[in-house]
Image 1: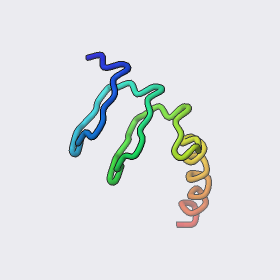
Image 2 (image 1 turned 30 degrees about the vertical axis):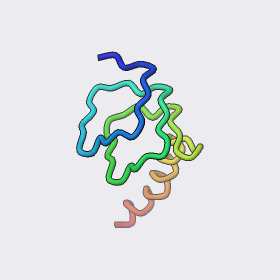
Image 3 (image 1 turned 120 degrees about the vertical axis):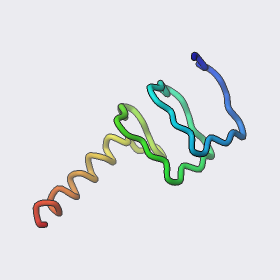
Image 4 (image 1 turned 180 degrees about the vertical axis):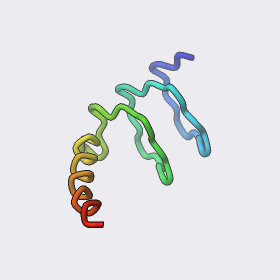
Length: 71
């Protein structure tokens, strides 16, 4: 299904599963993302509050790498 260029306003997608989807250049604004799970995704260029997600993940992994070795 091709929904390119669509606009969704005031939509409830609770408990929905998206699989094999393209969200390139999409924008999510004023959304509740509580308990959202994203797995096996390409985060290239994705930003949250202007911060690259790949940078956030890199920093997280670096800060937690030493903690795993200490265990």
